[in-house]
Amino acid sequence: MEPTSPTAKPQFSPAAQAEIKRLLTHYPDDRRKSALLPVLHIAQAEFGGWVSPEVQDLVAETLDLRPIEVYEVSTFYTMFNLKPVGKHVLEICRTGPCMLRGSDELTAQLERITGAKVGGTSPDGLFTLKEVECLAACGFAPVVQVREKYYESLDTEENVNAMLNELKSLVHRPILPWEENGLPTSLRNN
Amino acid sequence: MGRKLLTEHVNVEGIETFAVYRKHGGYRAVEKALKMTPDEVVEEVKKSGLRGRGGAGFPTGMKWSFLAKPEGVPRYLVCNADESEPGTFKDRYLMSKLPHLLIEGMIASSYALGARTSYIYIRGELLYVLRILEKAIAEAYAAGFLGENIQGSGYSLDLHVHPGGGAYICGEETALLESLEGKRGNPRNKPPFPAVQGLYARPTVVNNVESIATVVPILNLGGDEYAKIGVGRSTGTKLFSACGHLNKPGIYELELGVPVEEFIYSDEYCGGIWKGRELKAVVAGGSSVPILPKELILKTAAGENRLMTYESLSDGGFVTGTMLGSGGFIAMDETTCIVKNTWNFSRFYHHESCGQCSPCREGTGWLEKVLHRLEHGHGSMHDIDLIVSVAKQIEGNTICPLGEAAAWPVAAAVRHFRDEFEWHVTHPKEATQPGAVYRGNLVLA
Image (cartoon, rainbow over all chains, first blue to last red; front, side, top):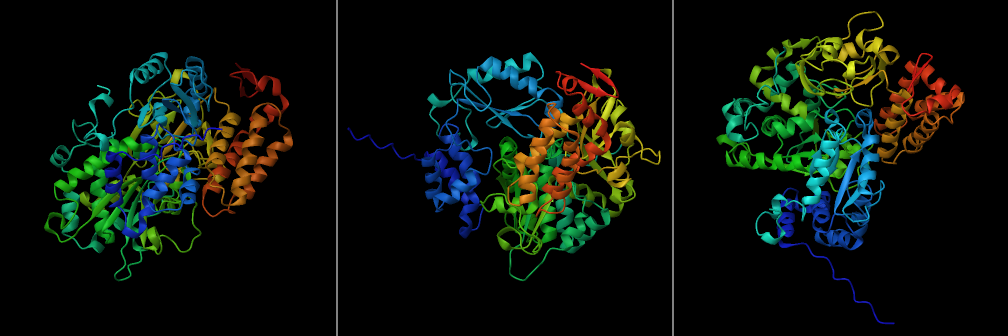
């Protein structure tokens, strides 16, 4: 049997490394672990919307932590995806106030349009549907979060379509503030 | 129209920038505070009667006075921006529209407490708001309101924003501190309280976003003047998050004391119930507080008008009253199924239980499962007593108040809407029709 080539070890981009360095100045020198959640967010943004075991190991190495310290945190907080996801993860709020204004119907509608089931990804790999609890936008229900953006008042066909069309038009995910310097124009959406 | 102390300039173009905020009187409270002693600032907040705006309603000035101040040990102010209580979205609004108001409050409060480093712990979902805050913080540093020797006063402060990762429990202050230390959000046993051993085992005060922002108008007006606004021990103004079946959901800043009926029906506020329907019930202070039927939310058991104050909303205790809580005001119209809604909330608490204490970890699961079968027409009369009993056994038996938060909504729903639960048992076929709702003996599809 041919030996399989080892997967290249993931590395943070220079922009991400600079951002992590900045974040570490926020905490006392002997409290680097405090940066774990912010660094996990950076990792998830850098490596395709989820944190693989290899990426979590990289986070551990970056912060001088034991891998288990990262695993126990990544499995506790719901925002970290532990399995590969589609290009856009639609986090649909399902809690009371959104339910009162039609989140069940919205979920069914999104399943129908995208072809994905909640917890799964559409056949074209574009959309992963995920049900989440209260997003603190109850007055503008129902609500979906995609990465750092909130899409609100999704009780009309028009708003739902506008959201999906906007997402479909994105070639790359939106640039984050710490990436603004030095990002090749080929990776910019506009 | 009442006075607006927090949101007066919210619609001013560019108010999220330092320059415009400053032009509208911004950072005057910091300038004033820096000319006072820290203890004098604490005294103003005590005099104001400000009660914690996160939900518990504990007097902020008193909380501040508990802070231990051992020589040579750093102490911290941590702002709780983990807003996650279903029905509540005021802090998100405040931070995204008026980032400098929170920063100004953080500086004045940190000065009062003697903190040299302060944190805003914001829920991870609000990364876009974190970006807004970081931008505003950079402006405040550039203007000399943060960093070394603020405005030549000799006082120095660093302020950082820290994101969570998606966990309701981190709104509990000791879970929040664990999370800020890079750990799972498991609440700590108390004592020791954070005021003695908080962040990094150092003395720490944790305050809600709105509480800290309110320090700004308190200092501008003076504590005594601020205390004149409102009714009795419910002083000042408060942000309410109106949602559910209202014509005009959104954020309203009220002088405490507005009648509930006026808040719901007046065009100045929520503009009544949507689609011309009748109001059925209200959860007045975030999903954790007891639900009340229309009759009891509009008037107390004694027949008096209920007011938007801490005291009036809790009039009657948990038998006929509720709590002001976080100000998350969820209105439900006549077509709302209370059983389904209660099940939904129980699913939330089960999902969000950190799993540390058995009564909560197991109890919330039982509540969700039994409510699910009641809602889906497979329940028995015994199940109704079972959920009340499980709720009772969670209450008071957990490290943190998530146990109570899970138990209260269930107990209250059965207390006020028992016949609706029974109808789900006696009429499973009708109850499981899409859109079916119990109204006395009527089924409306």
